[in-house]
Length: 219
Image 1 (cartoon, rainbow, N blue to C red):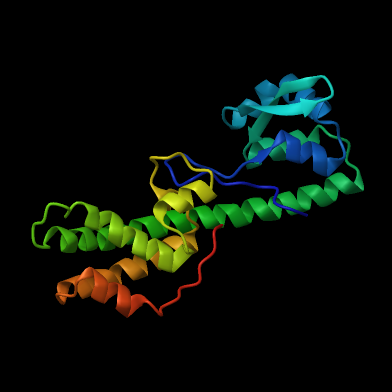
Image 2 (cartoon, one colour):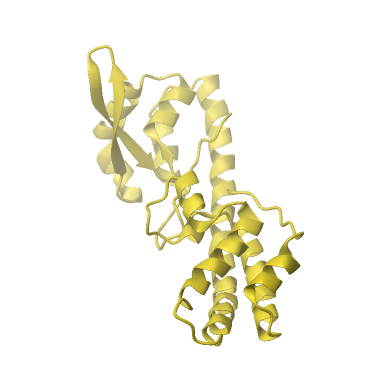
């Protein structure tokens, strides 16, 4: 099966979720039928937290219409499936859904740990940049070094990464990275911080890291 469970960017309160559309498609139910079941059982589902939703436009023969897509956490999704007919397709879907929720919970924990581990390393890097000689464009070095590191790890600058992952313009790009990418970025930031402390300038650091490749993938 394809991706059934999703994870929002790294932020407080983020948790893995699936959608009413995924449940409808993978259990062989009409999305309106699943939507009606959710709305009928909303009080029961919300014993496991607020049921969130998004409004998404879609094309029909009559033109563009809006569709409500519910976001369900693991407990909500598990409960919702009990309201559906327990066919072999539903059983297979539920098994894979449980597996993917476990995988996403593990990824979320890794991201949280990676962000905590990265914080002092990032501070060391910014302190190294702050200690550079004063120039009219010194503030741009934070962006230059960040983009250099991001390109080595992801192949993209911060701006390109946000665009590629449909992130808002001014958000922190690393919030849209996988745990593996955050770990790789932290390792590279540590290398750059050491090189700055050794007195190397940007071009020297860029040349030293030019042949270095770090393989990391988005979650």
